[in-house]
Image (tube, rainbow, N blue to C red; front, side, top):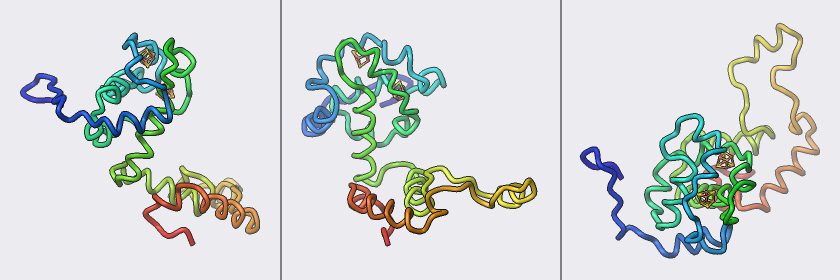
Length: 178
Ligand code: SF4
Ligand code: SF4
């Protein structure tokens, strides 16, 4: 998108099929986004200073810029707070669009490596974010090496994994769901 210090968008990159895919999850018509910026005004991603924040993501989605959206890791900075959905005057459901972009990125295997790590942790340990390297310190203060999760209960773990196997994780996980 950046070329010689000037923002350039090649509209030939517009992927109409991608727009239709996104509209299945969010707004009935992305083109109804009026670029008012209310979503950005409340979004922690924008407050954190990410350049490619929610308003720009929705703009790129409206233009069908699939390649740019999947290549940029900003969508993974979304905190799932849902504030954008509450404030959007056009019912675009920006958070749902972010989730749809993430699903497309996972299918395309273009999401950040730590996302796969999170999925693997979720499946194996019941926590997407699992603390590593704190085992000794936790033991010293009388805590178990790992925080208790459903994996502390073998039966629950099996049930949880069976549920995950019935979700789209089974299609997209880059590791075996055994
Ligand atoms: S709040 Fe809704 S209408 Fe406004 S820029 Fe964000 S998505 Fe578009
Ligand atoms: S759900 Fe994501 S995109 Fe929406 S306001 Fe929260 S962090 Fe921003």
